[in-house]
Length: 388
DNA sequence: TCTGGGGTCCTTCCGCCA
DNA sequence: TCTGTGGCGGAAGGACCC
Image (cartoon, rainbow, N blue to C red; front, side, top):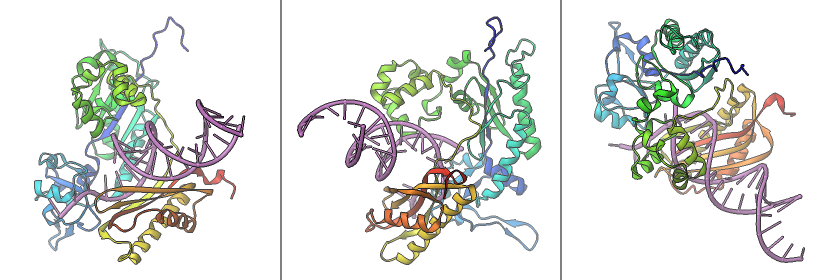
């Protein structure tokens, strides 16, 4: 605790989001595609083909047939209405001439490590939020609380700018950063000036900058909650903030209602978590064509065994044992069902996982055609912490 | 021509047990 | 012994996120 005479320090949390990350990494490798509509996604086929004259031939969305979705699109492709998550066949209707590149996660993970290391040189308190974004606690980084001229946020702004410079120097890539008193606001702020932007927001600026935004900008309000809020006549974050807490609880339940009320008013005290233990590990695959349990028994059996082996491999590589083994399947009508089973002893053995998953499989309807099969291990424990 | 893959967290229901 | 209550683990599904 600080003496009462000292100014309490302001909590400064940054959210850093790499701009169109996968697409930007691909542009580093294929600079001739700069400015063009490019979509990343689909399987491992559609690799660029090196021509006899040394140039590369890229496939376009027009050439694609399959069940893949767009993982990322360049800003030029987004102008055609192509978004991540969109089916590639649908994307092809909107932008048939857009270049299609396969995903290369090895490469993205490499650049992910590079940018995170570059950030850590300036500020070590980092929370991983996946391959292309992080939260950073800047509160106690030297300089963060400094006033520059008449700007009380000048110090933290300079720090964020230094982080951006470091990231660009280390990777050649741009990012967008939001700096605010908490994670919830930082996440919203990082999108306010994207791409290649920096936004610093104080609590006093919430009504002016946050409240006019649509409710869906809040991380945690998805399609369902957004539609329900719209139905109740609530379109902006400010309108939710003005709602009676009890009324929100009435409509959304105790937990979510309270969270909505706090979130809309910009309240969030979650810490920046520098380490998180995994809860589950899973592998799943969507088949190129629907498979039938009887007609395609052999093919399904092979895929099933492979998924179990992959989960076992993941567990072993990362040093975990799973006690709850589960399966997931998706029918041709996109209905998804799961079954799981908790074992007396945790395991990372492919055969044990395969056996337990097989028992789960016996408990589902296998009459309908299947489009997806998955295997999961949950209730994880560290392998070295468990006596075998 | 529908809609990937890898996750987390929450809710609900159920059986078991104190 | 009967009934209620509450905690807890397990199971299933759903919302949401990157």
